[in-house]
Image (tube, rainbow, N blue to C red; front, side):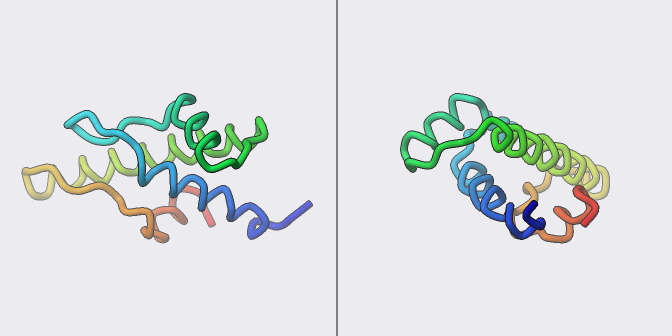
Length: 98
């Protein structure tokens, strides 16, 4: 079995999907199956079922982390803040315990 570094391509894929995600005026929308299918078709990269599960888990974790940070920033400043950027390695490590 490959070590964690063998799965970094999934983080890269997730970052591409995240950069193209839609918003609703109040924040980012979750990545949908339609988004995954379109990305796969347009890039020529095919997901295996377990990879879809990983991408969706990453999305839920990042969306949760963003919501918590936005709430904390709102409480501290009284106004909404920006989202967590994809280069927030510290936040990623907190979520995934690495």
